[in-house]
Length: 125
Image (tube, rainbow, N blue to C red; front, top):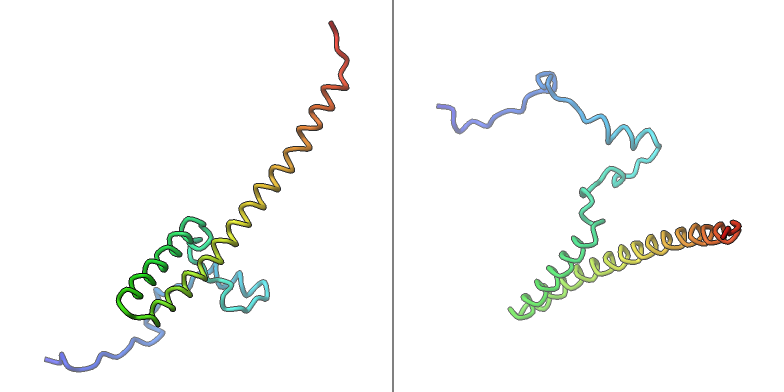
């Protein structure tokens, strides 16, 4: 009967079951950081080097497809996206190498200390 009538929104007082998430917003405001991006999370998708590599390859393929279809503007757009993910990939790759290098340099002194300890012990035959 009144199918064509526009439905009104409920007022705030009727939304008694509405609860705000306590964790994410209160933490950002308690630190004094009012930047809108502080709570933005992609579930780590752009921190995984394999996901970044796959996304980069996807945009490169889309650029090739757009170029073959005769759309150079769209191809350039996709290439710019691919370039962004290439920079992100290189950034993550360098970060990973630095962590590996740091771990390997931390392991070497402990190995040398073991060698020194073995040499300082008297040998009994």
